[in-house]
Image (tube, rainbow, N blue to C red; front, top):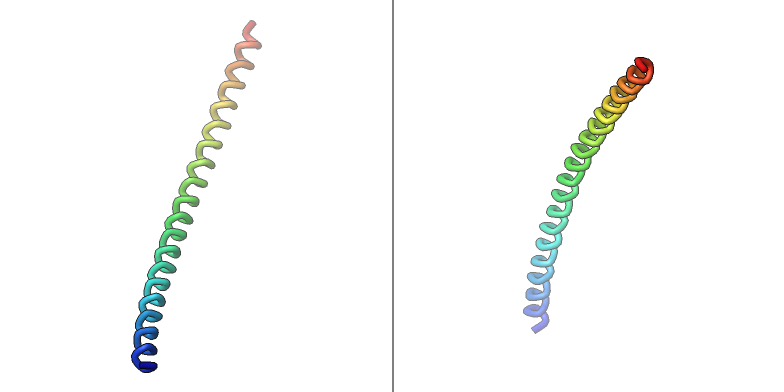
Length: 70
């Protein structure tokens, strides 16, 4: 009886360890994907900021010219 119980417990433990390992790998995969997404979004935001600054500079220059022409 003890040997059978030990074998069953051992099998159940092995199944749980495999499930935990699979779960851990999925978490690692999701974190890697999130890191890639974060890097891409950071680059996109920097580009938006750069373009916004350029547009504001252009608008400012046009306003200055308009004011000087009056």
